[in-house]
Image 1 (tube, rainbow, N blue to C red):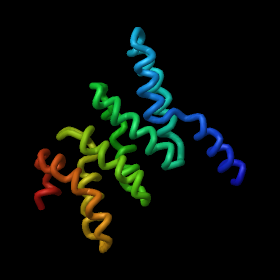
Image 2: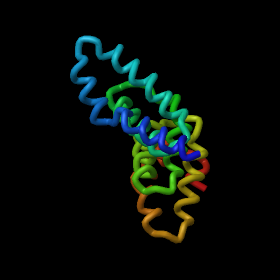
Image 3: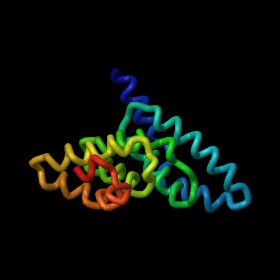
Image 4: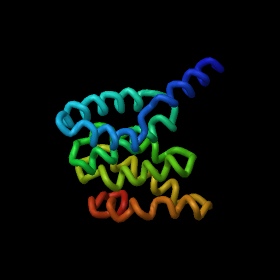
Length: 148
């Protein structure tokens, strides 16, 4: 178990973060599509890991790629997984990704709205504040769970 934790920490040290992704895209202007394809493959591997910090980092990079026009709908469940994290920094990344990447035909809208209900029924006012930016985007979808 301890070896797995140490190995995970060492592996995370070499993971690309969002800044590295942006820098790499700028440096690969001539073969940007190929570079981004390689990055997406790396992100898919990061999303398969158990460590929520690695997943949050991957979702952050996917959100940026979505803003560049790439389809990241395949990672919707991973976004919900990061949204349900207990750490504020990861939860914030998940809610940002959901508000940017989800649309009316996203399969996990029901999971997202249930997550929002769970957080909004929480006693902690800080948790309720975290979801405020995501709610308007979800109401645009006219999801039956949201209007009920």
